[in-house]
Image (cartoon, rainbow, N blue to C red):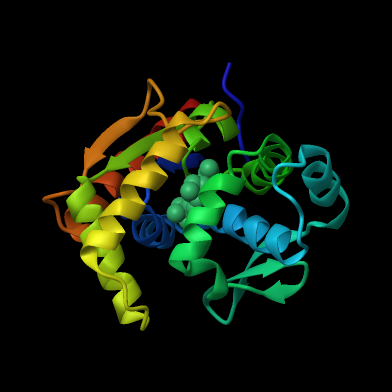
Length: 235
Ligand code: DC
């Protein structure tokens, strides 16, 4: 028997870095009138806090103590734009550098970090009416999500998009460097022991390599709306 959620369904979007999850999740949430939860941003904020606090990532007890006692990560909306707050500080921009991406990939493999963030992600989505994006939403965070997507794209296409994005923000990275980073993060994210990146059995796979954002969004919106209707018809 499925849980009935008061605010709508849970839409899970998983996939490797650079597949377009964030853009798609934001637009899909807007179209459905849902809240977007970027779980990657939460892992990035955790990595920033741990590194600023000088915690030795090899010392799991120290990481656990810090996550339990000193870490407060929130996703909030501020005049229409989404901000990431780490212990009250706005870290929205700082968490996006290539160095932070690699550090986050490492930090997100640590059990106490995942345990701490899992709880808050489940709380954020509990009532439904949310689009959550990440790596383990459909497999671990909400295995009972009503709608699951697995968004992929080729390594070259993902690196090209990431490189353009970073260059636009004034970060001078090359395509070759970005390809190396993408491959390394893919490996770290899918080979880790806890909650590795993996397609849930009941997720709809979408390869965005040769599709426009609009095409991907259209397909995902139609499937999500059909699911919302089917769920409300069952009530
Ligand atoms: O989606 P992103 O690139 O902002 O994610 C940053 C890192 O966090 C990435 O290496 C994978 C990790 N992550 C994770 O392990 N689980 C999630 N649900 C979301 C992100």
